[in-house]
Image 1 (tube, rainbow, N blue to C red):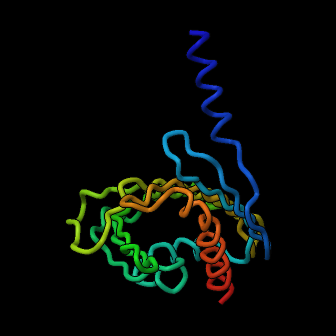
Image 2: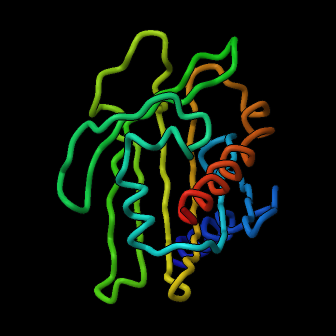
Length: 195
């Protein structure tokens, strides 16, 4: 039992070892080592103008993802499960000679009764849509949004993402650019929520 709890605490500690990678405009991007992969995971912390309801509207507007999610080529709805859950397809553009990546993601929304806290789980469910020729299906995707309504006009966001891009992308090449995409994405999101 002692060994179990020791290993469990070590696992949690490793997950919390984050290194600040990029900062600007109130957005902080951290990177950390995933326990099961050589690819780095990402954590974003920021505070921006907006409300939880407006953020939910943006996240549920799957067709608009290419306007703010970094390097998104196309997205479409696969299945509406309920008002709080849906599954969508996304293709991400990568520079030659790499092939584009695609993924199928389940989004599950959980807002507290007071309406001032929101959790969104984004999980890869690759079997929910057929693989397409010329693209590499992302084998692992796990994202978590933790959002608080800080005041009437601002939300605080903590976002974590672990992903394995699949195919032949070397981990060192992926890790060189792992903070650029989230920083651009959250910069675009802040602009969108200000409109």
